[in-house]
Image 1: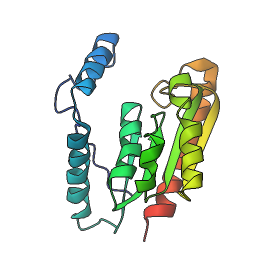
Image 2: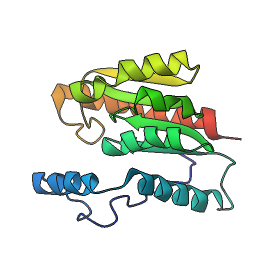
Image 3: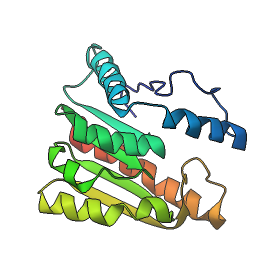
Image 4: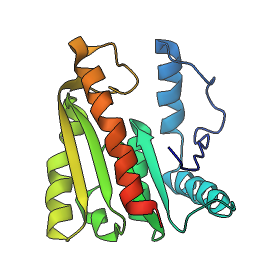
Length: 179
């Protein structure tokens, strides 16, 4: 797509890469609970600094995250004054009180059948609007949590969501990050 992509190991090697079974997912959740959010944000800052120093880098960077990483991406929009754009795939929103610090546009992509995450959308939307911040979100009908990863589930709704969401992601980054 023409972007530099860096995928930092925010779990610091605490789980086996590629662990997608129930045991692997439980290990990931346990590892996430041990992380210090401030350290995670510093790791993203370091990855961004590395990427931005590359000769092909543009003046702005973006972040995209999925599930827990989606929430981390939204949190990075709160944390970083230099962020150019954030894409949140089925991640929870930060507390409304924190959203005043957001400087970058945020795109949220969610499945309709994801009650826990979707419950955080209206408060974030209201707060971001009240603050004059850019927050666009799309809720894909019939899709569930993790629709990009689990495209064969939800009777085709996840696949339909994935087919729409990824081009939206690329366009959002192009609109907000390219020179």
